Amino acid sequence: MFKILIIFVIALLFMGCGPEKNPTVKTAMFQSVSEESAILVQDGSEKTSCTRCGMNLIKFYKTSHSATIDNKVYQYCSIHCLIDHLAEGRSLDDPKVVDASSLKFIDIRAAHYVVGSNKKGTMTQISKYAFSKEEDAKKFQADNGGKIMNFFKAMEIAKKDFQ
Image (cartoon, rainbow, N blue to C red):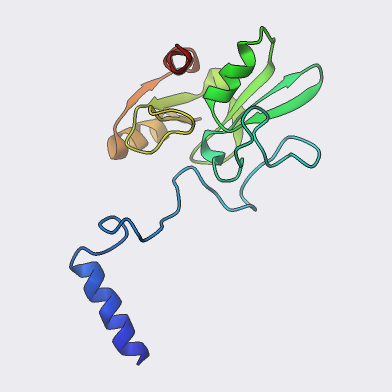
């Protein structure tokens, strides 16, 4: 019976009925990582939630940003929520973004953002993923499209969500 089931599943995949062709089959989101892979920098009971919108930081980890305000570290699900906090006239210290390759936080000033890829964005229609190494950004761009830019250019595009 098990062999028949395996043959059936292989046949379905071979005939184009896999997850990419069948919307009822769930696949993991690109932004998501395992709980063990996520670096959560906030303290307290809400450490797994975006400080602005409450979205799950593990589910939207690859677009996570962080910053410090008055010696308190905040973590955001996206550049969108980081900008939302900046819009209050806040001065954010030590801003960082998750490198989508290594899954570690890096300084936003050193990040190479790929903006507008075919990977789904977080809190926006235009995706924004950051990489510490330019070669990683170029490989991601070659596979998924988009444009490579620095944080400040990515931030200008993200600000358009608020207009």
